[in-house]
Amino acid sequence: MLWDTIERVNQLRKAAQNNPDYIQSAKAHAKALHDMEHNEQAAKKRARKVQLKAKRLSDIYQQVEFGANPTGTEH
Image (cartoon, rainbow, N blue to C red; front, side, top):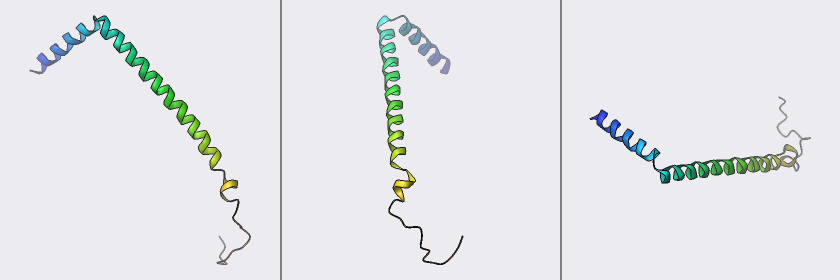
């Protein structure tokens, strides 16, 4: 039963590889995947740059005063 299924799938695969419409569709699909992956990587790079610029310690602690020690404990 498993061998029959494998053989049937193999025959369908060979038939698809001989079909020019299938080959054209597969190439278009591969190009779409490549373009989508490229766009996601570019968006991640842009987002990371924006995120890094927004999280500088000098900006985060700009309004904090470190001179006073209210608890009196030392580290």
